[in-house]
Image 1 (cartoon, helix red, strand yellow):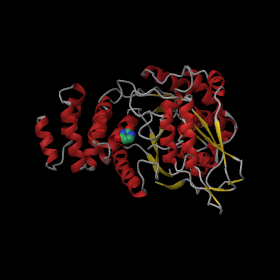
Image 2 (image 1 turned 120 degrees about the vertical axis):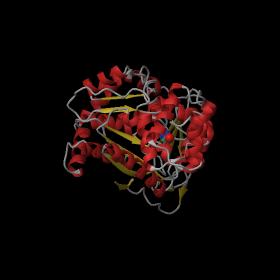
Image 3 (image 1 turned 180 degrees about the horizontal axis):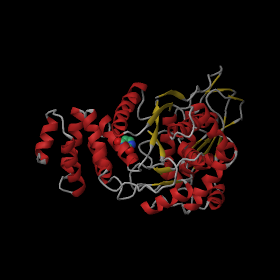
Image 4 (image 1 turned 60 degrees about the vertical axis):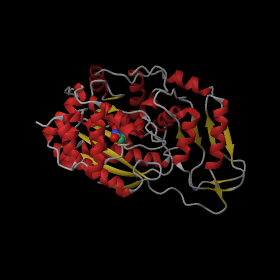
Length: 432
Ligand code: URA
């Protein structure tokens, strides 16, 4: 057995660590015998030297078992989750989890908060008064058994190694490494005791992976780990250059998701949601073809069962939906109108996310309190033809000065052209 110092020197010099080395290291991280400085050194050496596929798999499994994993009660249903690499206006989980569970899948969705410029499902859920994202493992198990789904934050007992590593990676410039990202994401998913996983690999100017090549490299790394432990995984590569759906902002996005389940969704949001949920149905083996899986999802959407399931989940986790609707209805937006007639140009999702974050919709620092009402609702999209005076976007924020600043930012973000602009293409780039 190597001492921690030897193990770090070994990795620093570019040697391959065995599964035992990594297991011993992660054990020490969680028990506290490995210091934060040593964790930082490990992450930096991993970034500089890289982690090969065996090291990545060993790190993922050691992290998965660094704490508890969710119990498997016999519900008779397959347990599948979806994970997105993060986007702007990405409220897909809020539609997909009720849809997938209406289709007969158990969805144990342990989500995160906003990361960088991207929004987080937990922040969206917490905009509903009373909704609790802090669940014990027993409560998670109960919700899955009774309702087939829950949406919650990580507990202190699940994957403690990731919490420690992630905090140190964040301040040592070691987030951007394929092996570390793979282990971080997959360990949290594997701790849900899944039968299968669907990954939404966002690609574009507002995604962490800006090029298809980068997203494919991450997918290859994740696929290799999933294959090594026999967990079926599907990768859906989707565009992330413009906001998904018509709302960006915590409450506005959950309100959009609820309304979409009750009626229908904006075209690109519907496309991404149906595709990802259909792959969950397919991976679960509930349908033999992806076309039949899509049809099953659309049925659950149209017959209202997913909408009911959404409200069951909100109520089961303490959320007071009608209170939320009443409370947020009191906010008055600034409505920005088009100054001229023309066609709406490309809407830069990254710029929108930054502006909404500045207005209080996201955090600049970990301990910032966010304004759940802050955000924007678009009345147009790229390629929409507008006349002078047509509404382009409604801007919300509790604080009047911040609302004015957000409105000013949106005025410069939404531009019109005098010639027609191409509409948004299909959101799906490829599927593995
Ligand atoms: N999301 C995670 O959970 N971990 C990473 O390392 C990157 C994104």
